[in-house]
Length: 388
Image (cartoon, rainbow, N blue to C red):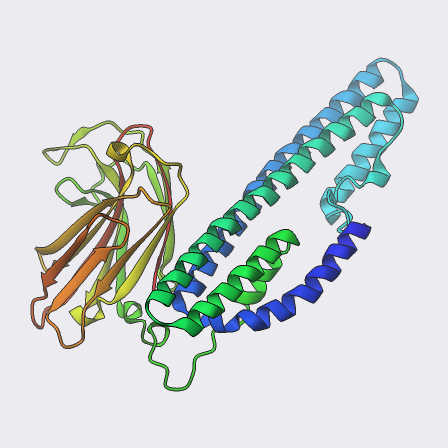
């Protein structure tokens, strides 16, 4: 408990100052978007830990019930009462949330018994499982934050190359603050304190955060697709991938494992299957955005790596199509259409090279399709994406 209060005090001293120093960096759209992704990943880790803990709790209750039955059959009254008392205490702790000042709220150390030995062994086994769950989550949060710091360091270099020194300095300051947050195990509190603060836009500021042309896109639909012949939303397509997307935030995630072998659909042999999203962009000048992809699956051989496909269409005419393997942990696509130009540039920073320039038809709206697909049975995809 002393450790808890020490950590709480340290966090309370650290977070307000850090948040105040970091607000300028939050004015950079890329930073705030990347911070959102970090927050979402931490929430996912929390959900994973909660599911693991529920399994441990259920297993412990089953073990207690079996232990009480065995002692009852042996005619051991005192031990039956002792186990029954622990069952009632544990159920009440689960219902109320337990002691919030303990690392394991539903089984504080004060509840450990000396006898019977079988009950003490069950309690210690449960505590080991819960402690392992906590340790795994702390390690995962630290690893995730280090990857986030690496991304911040990339931004520092990028803004420095562009001559935006003040912005680079603010981002570097944020990098140091997250490094300290790992040391004090306060990453979650620090992240949430930053997200709770609105980005401070200067009067008359004309940054991408205020323009955000992509917010004028109309999200139309998402569904299963195959890049082989651009087949979309057919009932015959397999559903091996899960797609989550929030249109208002421009953020989503695709996960899944390829289970379907090549098959003939709509009169054509299809080898690649996935999910795609479609937007009506409207005027081509709205095709100004940055698409950042963050992959969480492990590295795979280039020939079998999951891929992303970006298509721009006008009516039934395909103006451009770029397909890039998801071979880097972070990949960035940029769409650039100058307001006074009839040409759009699309390029991916991590491809070698992967870029194209297209002629935009005058006075005709364009449509953007973003697809993710897997190519081999057993292949895994787990990729978050964000539009800015």
